[in-house]
Length: 362
Image 1 (cartoon, rainbow, N blue to C red):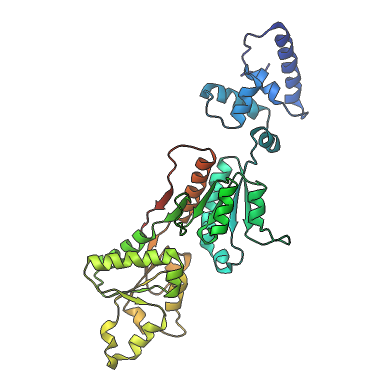
Image 2: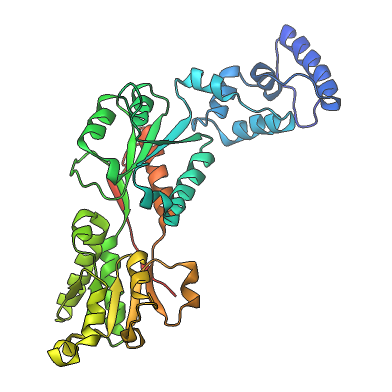
């Protein structure tokens, strides 16, 4: 008899079955034979089969003592639950989906995309679920991969970027009662479209205030013009900048092209030299790299306090230091996945959105 199993009060026929089982399991311990069943685990634990199933499925209405007893037996006999059988029993796929826009090559190639994915995957796997990545790609039958997954309920819930939260996809999710969470602030303004995002307004504000604390007063921001109007996170960073400048009674300066700085330096007699900034905020790393383009040359860089959003590995090798705001994209992924599981489990008090604060990097 296994050392940790205590024989409980059993009926006569159950006692015979129990002893036979223990004898067979002693043989099983010495050689690799057929896998232990849920019924056999139940007998060894002195509980019924339904209790074992609830432990396997993560039911919370089980005492910690009973849960540990069942889990110890499963561990000793290397019992691995059959995910297909579990899915049939619970009428779930035990799979979470993530949809991305495959046509957006820039976003897909962005290394920060994978930080979000890393956070999502950690939570998904901790919940003993599978993770399915898909693109919003139109198939031969006119139905996108995303639509097929939702309509055929290949997953129990999905996470999508806000770039894919259009009216069509939103109505599809609602029609098929598919739990979902959006990464990036909801721009459709639907009250029941839950989202998780970085607090980009706060990020823009604290980065500007950090430069002001350093003594900078003529602070310029490179915001990209039409791009800032199209991308919510850029417009939010710009709004945070304006808030801080207004609060300190400073004049905002927004540029749309990197060559504006070169013109400021090359035209000293035009009066533009009075507009030269003592600090420059770049809203993206791509914009920062434009400013750092040494081939074109930019003597103003020696006079500027450069700043951007989120750190990058190569920053320590730059000639001039770059101030930045720490943005926890992995946490964004974790929060999105955790919110999705809460919605899938129909928990109460789940927030409609989560805005993740930032801090000045060190």
